Image 1: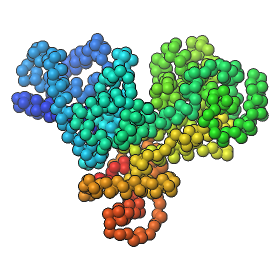
Image 2: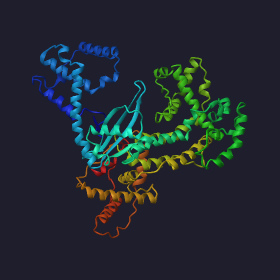
Image 3: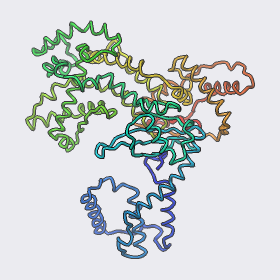
Image 4: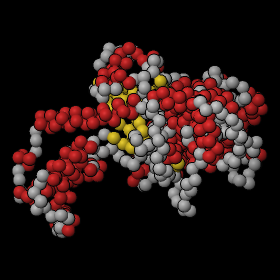
Length: 585
């Protein structure tokens, strides 16, 4: 099954589609040319609806199955056969399980042979990437090794294909065993001889790093960002420590928070809370010390070493998680859904973006939850202790990270060119402003910590830099350092020489219209492109020799100066993200 930018869902391979089309063409031609002209009575429609509903309910099928194109095609074929022959016995038409198994193997082999040609061609031309991953089935107690292929076709469309998913039956997950299973999967498509021509994308697991050490490897940036967020907010440590001991003051007295009750016209001096006065005084005394030390290295700080303001952030996260667990325990999510309110989502270490989704779901559900708690005489204190303003600031902190992680995981648009600008977007979001409110200052510790984590954990691969260069919107790489720009151009020149050697240079075709694709996280990238592309700086051409290298220099220089896409959006058009592949068509 293949997906590309013009396809929003998986489709049958062309072999299966051709076989189905040929089967329809073999039917007698007396079938009405336009079945839509046939009128079905309401009684017959209701009978079909009832039968379909009974099938879904009695056999516990997903209700989404009624939207399945394969089911519609099967019913269409059945109607055509029935039209020609009248009522027929289902048993005379339906094959047995053994027959279906053989047919699956037959179609699978045909589809695999078809894909071999496509994938081998892409591998030879060094435009194929593979993403292997291990996952476990807790129910069956077995692990699987899956692999996804992505490549560009001859028309510069991004294509994706689930290459294989093999049971992992090796005694352990060592690098030696891992590479053997990967090679077994590649053998199915004849790709084993091309492992050095493939770009491998994986996480930073020690077994994967060692198994793929000989090849070109690009580590998954989304996986890295997720780990960085967990490290920034001490998520692993929070699951190990005794929270009531580490955050004793806050668990005892954080039921009320002055920040949630201050109006626009109130000042801190106007508010007095008898239960919190001692704690507030303690915060004020420690505030100067906190901001003096916040610029120091915080990477090695443990939870017990956190300043009091930073602990407030973690306590808010803990309180939200506790609320979600409680709501799920007493089964209030269904009642929230019945009221068309947002349901609560749990946060777990293994699920990416789950912290943001958890906090956002809590924020959206606070008002309806308050009503539910009052109606059922539940302990509303679980809601009241959450600092709404601080919760909003945490969500605001996480939003750029979430947007970036969603974008770099997209399979509809290439994402390699978004890595360097995405990191700039995140870094800019961490900048503190002089007029920050008190709530923003409470999270400034984590802004500083996140900056230090980024500095330590993020380093750009040559492919990241070249991806930035070959996006015409960021071709001048103004957001990169001068050293990174110089390194990028050297990498580009080396690749151009390799293209010459391998004789893979294709003559440029006619310029096509530029296309854009809607994206949930396009706003950050669209804004970044608008700030990057308008630069009228002009550099002198200089003189170059007639050698290949000199010709490449001229080509690079011309691209940097004039490689502007002149396509503009129509007024009122939906904001979409630019597809950099369109420029190269």
